[in-house]
Image 1 (cartoon, rainbow, N blue to C red):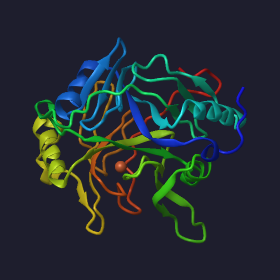
Image 2 (tube, rainbow, N blue to C red; image 1 turned 60 degrees about the horizontal axis):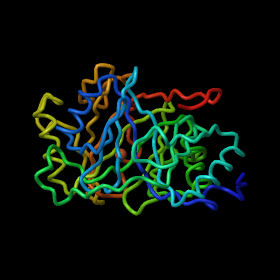
Image 3 (cartoon, rainbow, N blue to C red; image 1 turned 135 degrees about the vertical axis):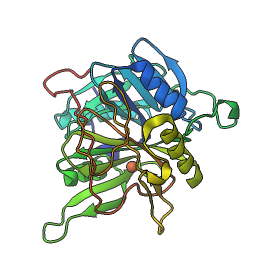
Image 4 (cartoon, protein in one colour; image 1 turned 90 degrees about the vertical axis):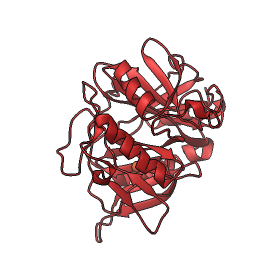
Length: 319
Ligand SMILES: [Fe+2]
């Protein structure tokens, strides 16, 4: 048995956000939304899952739909550098009392996978190997819908965002692109935008009822593509008006541009635009589409939480 010799950041190398799995009660309807409107590409499918990727992804999947009894987020996956990293990480997580198991065999195209539940209740997968697939950048005839170039980040909620920041930076070795904190004397972190790869951020941890997913971010190549995506979603009936009435926020001091579209994934899987004033729905998750930048939201913004509780309890073996 491999014995860990320190914190994860000293014994392993987490490379980047790998994929996110959404649960849906209507797999084909979800596929229609994400393939024909959002513009993801289907790599493969099995009885329970559809494996999708973005135009610039060379990995087998970066976004997965799984048929389930309730809608929400199944897990978040991160890519690590090597198989040995996984062994050391498993030992370390067990030292910390976190539940772990090997869970790679049920995901097509994905190698040995270490599944754990972090201290905040999120189900997280780590894996080193994933099948490589053809690049679709120049397959212009296959581009449709909003056509994201890559998956960008996950944004999650937990009641203690300070602890989330500490975990990701001090234990896992994430860098912090940006943070917001409460005023002195308390001076606790309210939200942090954290990264491993060199673009934008991989995960943001914000204060809110959790464990819950707030949204998943996809990247588009330029600002006009976001406007076009807004119009496309509106035209397809996912808004009652054109992009001029959607929440599109521009930060003039940075190159970030976030289109705050929230798509509710309720049991019927009927996406709907949700405004900040809309009461928080249950069992839902959102997406945002963002241009390259180092932030995805305004400082001290009001969180529009889309509750999405993870189901895995530490007393039971994770699925
Ligand atoms: Fe975001």
